[in-house]
Image (tube, rainbow, N blue to C red):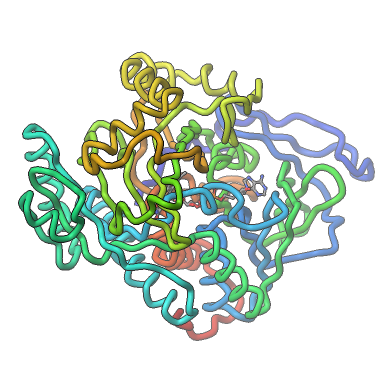
Length: 468
Ligand SMILES: Cc1cc2nc3c(=O)[nH]c(=O)nc-3n(C[C@H](O)[C@H](O)[C@H](O)COP(=O)(O)OP(=O)(O)OC[C@H]3O[C@@H](n4cnc5c(N)ncnc54)[C@H](O)[C@@H]3O)c2cc1C
């Protein structure tokens, strides 16, 4: 597990007086820090009180809320989401691939939780009758210089415990995918596709059926330290809604840095939004590929490269690319938010990365503007796909965690501030859950639940753990 080094809140904060929002308790405490966030402290006026509040109704928050209530049905748990439905962001705008766990550094959380998560996911999908396709995946080397990386990937997959991986020669590739050409390929038969938004909704349904409650249209904007020792955290949207919690889990994806600051925890790792745009194959050409076809990824980046993915709904998507988004939820070129943009370019880590990979960024933008160049990338694998066969597809925005030195944070990151102020010590943050976060969601949820139990030592008597 990655634990980010934290500066103790008490050291960083000066205490100054402010007026509370209720007006009733005039002089209260406001911690101030240059690096970490701020929160206020005032009397608990809220009516809704929860043992655990999970913030963020993507697949990670939903899976975690579900796991927590399955293990502790007697706890009062609620799931808060700022949108009017679940899986509105990354969890509903992705490639839909059930990854097998090939790419990830052996021993990393990604490697462990993806392999475990894939098995849990298939069990879950079977049990719930959610449609998926075990369509398999080819990672194809089309040029000689890609072969060593392909062979390294194969070794990684084996080390990670990915089952039934095979190395194929050119003619064997065609036996699996007749139109696909390449020098050598990895065949992963257990890779599949599913609609992760549907899976998220199913997790939420499990959660509510076990007694959990949900709050949609609730954008958390403030954490306030309460004088109620039992429910010390007040969570508010700064307008009309506020609820109290004993413990909090945040799974806010693109906003995980912002939410961390609001709890008095550090901003880093910073989240930089990268849009991934897809093309659709026109429906009459959907028969050109049956398996997932992936390039050999550039090892410098955590992105897997433009791939061909036949989805469960019968459409085939080509993508995604990786373009800097000008705001956290920048799904289109025209989506712009000055505050987000200033934060991105003001972050020294981003400026370092941009300088280092300016060429890559320009190439990606050019390919985004000229569809024919994106088509050229997939023609390396299936020559028969032409510009006339594609149309504009969906887009997703990746929450890419970045350190101050410009390095991309690759692994999952979960952290908190045990021993700090009343809020920081009651919160666990999911700071970085990029791909294969959806595949890994049930395994991540188990790890988060274990971590919350260990760290917060739930005082309420625990029920026996219920399996998925
Ligand atoms: C283009 C793309 C392709 C991908 N492909 C795959 C793939 O094929 N397979 C795979 O396994 N993974 C894939 N991933 C990764 C996967 O989608 C993510 O790992 C996963 O969705 C992360 O889930 P999450 O719950 O952490 O984040 P999100 O789904 O982004 O959820 C975070 C939620 O928090 C809410 N929120 C934020 N701030 C607040 C606030 N202040 N108050 C209340 N709510 C708030 C947001 O509205 C959002 O709903 C892909 C991702 C992208 C972007």
